[in-house]
Amino acid sequence: MAVSDGTTMMVVKDMGLVTQVFNDYKLAGLLGYLAIGHTRYSTTGSSSWHNAQPMYRQAGGTEFAVGHNGNLTNTQELTASMAMLPGMATSDSDLIAELVARELDIAAGPAPNGVASLSAVLTEVLPRMKGAFSLVLADRCNLVGVRDPNGFRPLCLGKLDDGWVLASETPALDIVGAHFVREVEPGEVIVISADGCQSLRPWPPERVQPRLCLFEFVYLARPDSRLYGQELHAARVRMGELLADQAPAAADMVVGVPDSGLPAAEGYSRRSGIPYGHGLVKNRYIGRTFINPDPGQRALGVRRKLNPLRETIRAKRLIVVDDSIVRGTTTRAMVAMLREAGAKEVHLRISSPPYRWPCFYGLDTGTRAELIAADLEVGEICDYLGADSLAYLALEALKKATGVPSAGFCDACLTADYPVPVPTSLSKPGLEVSVGWRPGSRERDTLAAPFPRRAGPTQAGADQAGPGQAGAGAGAGAGASTGTDS
Ligand code: SF4
Image 1 (cartoon, rainbow, N blue to C red):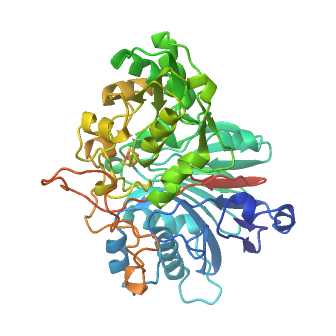
Image 2: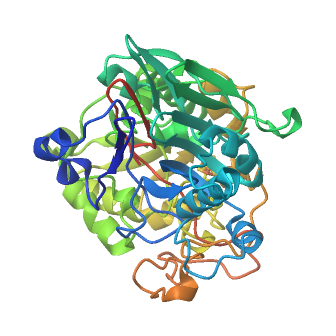
Image 3: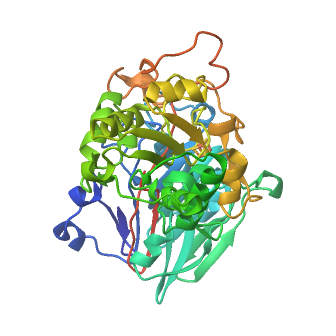
């Protein structure tokens, strides 16, 4: 978190959960009237203190901090253009800070007391960046929000009685008592200062093509978030309804996988007429297994995270609804757990299409080799997972369920239609590899596929590690946060 009182910025950041990093004692020392915060979900760059956010720099007679949700795709081009030595930037977010700092220094000029304008520099720097980036920045007196011209990751604007708030998701506004003003538009820069709120458009109109991540609707964003004017819980219920139309099954009970599978399960039950039941209890003190970088830990994590209600599911034919299957590790463990608990049949229903391609825009889903649907057919996946049947929601039905089917979406992980070209050399440790990156610490590309694979030319296209970030937070007076709870 970075806080400014108008003359000095103070930054406090560390590794771990927000509640492990901040307590009342630390917060009491963070005095000021504008702040940014970010909880990083590591993608490009290792999970280390240096890469924790916000990034901070002193440059151009001022100081600033930046929080970044998303993933740049042209890091190599940018480091080359700045003639940066290996290791000078350790993540794409660090590179953004370095890029802005250098331009601030240039803009301030050689005069000893020259001070550059952050917003003026950003209008120069931002068009050089490619990929996914929702940013919040702060200098001593200004708060800035940025959404890339595709708007891969969300960002919204809220209003307090005496200030403004930027946040990735609308529930953050509710938490601090701000009211929702509007979503920051793709390709828009919002500058908040003592003079009010100003909107800038640094990209030419032809570069602005909305492509909001479809998985924000499926899984990433909170159910009480609003995107494209739609409440996500209602959209997820509709996904379940359409899934019931598309893939019916004879069963005794519909069970949702907590938490993000629950709304779709509700919709499936409502449409099919099959009773909804709580078959799985979630341990509230375990985070998303999706985030854990180690496959073995993810499989163990499902047992720590979910517990079956044996009395409820014993001898029943279950329809189990989940939002997605990425690697299959946790789903396989869950099916085995349900069978051990006495389920007679387990019919998996997934409220998104098969996840076949890596994400390079802010979701760390691993390489193609790690994605179970990369080259297996649905029947083969079903066999591997040990389910009685498996069905996925069709892409068109998913878009229809969002409530805004004709809005711009990125669906590259489902279709390989990448809105921003991705260099095949892009990888998670790409910026660190030449300064002592240790394979095994967080290296994904060397992981063996955990399931049987077909022989053949299946690795077409981009086949490298994916990206991303996450977070939540709020400032007093004016504040901002980026990220999702992923
Ligand atoms: Fe979202 Fe998939 Fe696009 Fe990544 S590739 S931004 S997860 S839709």
